[in-house]
Each structure stands twice: as C-alpha cells, then as structure tokens.
Image 1: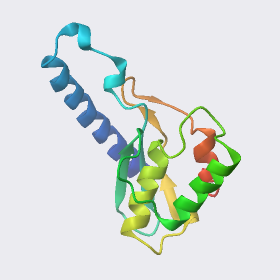
Image 2 (image 1 turned 135 degrees about the horizontal axis):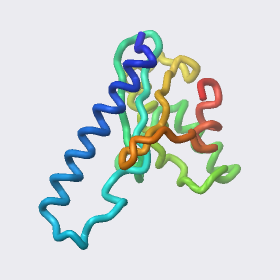
Image 3 (image 1 turned 90 degrees about the horizontal axis):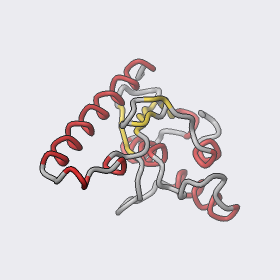
Image 4 (image 1 turned 135 degrees about the vertical axis):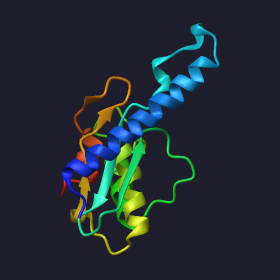
Length: 141
C-alpha cells in the first residue's frame, strides 16, 4: 500500500525533473522566450491502495489517451452536464494519473484510488482539487 508520504515524495521528484527540463530548455532559448507556461499547471500522484505502484502525471491536453471504462463514463457524464469549473474536461493531472493506475490494475475500483495533493511545479505550492476532479473522483477526493 502506498503511503501518503510515498505519494508526495513521488510528486516532488517529478517536480524536480520538470524543473530540470525547463531549465535545460530555457538555457537553449533567448531570455525573451521564457514563459510561466513552460511549466505544467499541476502535478499529482495516484496510487492503488492495495499495491505500492504510484503514477505521477501532469496537467495538459490529453493526447492519445485511451481512457479506462470507469473514468471514461465519469468524464462523459461531466461533458453532458457541462464543466463545473474553467478547466477543460480530461486535461487535469488527476484523471490521467488515475487512468494509468486503472490500466495497470484493471480490478481497481474508483474508491480504491489514492491521490496526493495537487502541486504547482513552478512555485511548489499545494493547490486545491478542481470541481471537475471532485465530481469525477467523488469517492476519494
């Protein structure tokens, strides 16, 4: 079982990796090309409470994502009622991380997911879950 501390350690390792990537990218560009958009908005970790495997994801447009059935049905419901906040449906880090867990462990139920707090990599500050994610993962958030 992944502990709360394990989840957060993985998030901070991912944030350090992102910061190194951004620094390397910025060193290759002229200074006027720097942007806060070099960083993803949010990074979050998700684990299956019965296993120790943890997946970390970043927010952003979902490209070539094959959603698992549970998550796909929740996101489809959300599309029908309309987004509950300004975030595009499916672009948050939470559904992407949960999808990786569900693909790796197909027997995992939605109430067996465990999330870290979401963090903003640029500032390393903890953020709140958005309303779309709270709806999609209402059992655990």
